[in-house]
Length: 179
Length: 179
DNA sequence: ATCAGATGTTGACACTGATTACATACCCGC
DNA sequence: GCGGGTATGTAATCAGTGTCAACATCTGAT
Image (cartoon, rainbow over all chains, first blue to last red; front, side):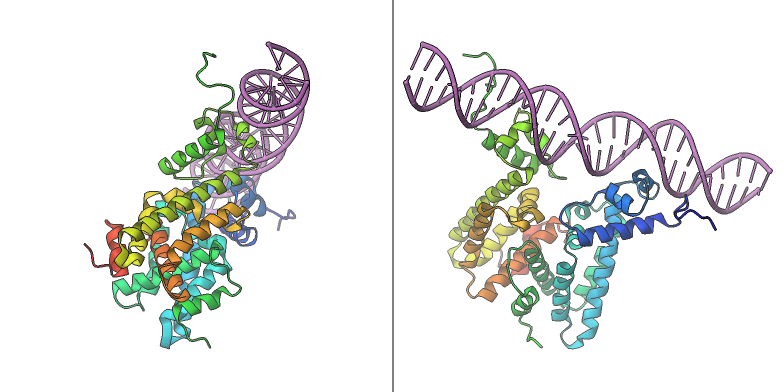
């Protein structure tokens, strides 16, 4: 029962850092998020982060892993809600996720994760993809579906496909019979 | 007749900067390239770059525009060399370009170009895409082809599709009858 | 109660992008 | 030819970043 608002020991700083970083990513999103700003948000000195994470890159890897977990869950939910046309529903959910959280999505599929030194990240990513591959059929069909939605999501994120209603565009391309 | 190797005035610094930046991008490529390092490579002080470019972002935009020019050219060449199956050839060329110059490709389709404040860049990008759209047929078919190859390229770049022979994988997915 | 280890702080270093004030070289009009 | 104006370069500086080492503080096991 200390009277100080913030005790010396935070309690669960790593979680607070990750949460602050996600907020940062989702709100500003314009550029790269700085470790210092994350620490500031968590109400802690910059160096404190290094007690919980070896590196800024490692923190980003954890964020990406978190992202893949939420991503896989969203895909699974979409598939469950439309058992008849699971693949199309997942495709739409794929793009919707990307558009709703651009910075997180870009981080998940960025050069940092490409280096893939973090094994937790790799597992999370594989698991998310397994959800998608499970409903696609053959290997080639699975890759085709995956590549297509991923490409559409990326192009929309980059503004290469200007569209008032991106989701409608995706449905058109996928041949989803609307409603 | 100065004995100094490098005259005070460089002659064409902007070109030298862009060239140096491209070299940097293509060799290290791991992270973001710094304006200072680019200037160092060009044998010039960091501030000199600001005489030719208002911003680091503007320099990157120019690089991306250059990239789109080379990209469109590569696509056009591929189409010309395989008149029978232009679309497939362009798809393969699309991925090959991305894999040969990962950093440049990522820059071209990155958040910087998404902001698209630079109009030259936007024009270059549209032109590259026009090459692709020209051979695809309907709008939906064009978007489908484009999204697919773009997605495959990105996933391969991110190491999400580990493959010994990425190009073969792409051909398989595209259904290209090899040789 | 004490002491070891975990956790957080302070201060520093090297680096970055960006701006400013100043120096130099080139070029055009005379 | 030459002198001034302008384009182009430099050096110095500022704020912000990732990272580290040294120090301070808390917490739990013995």
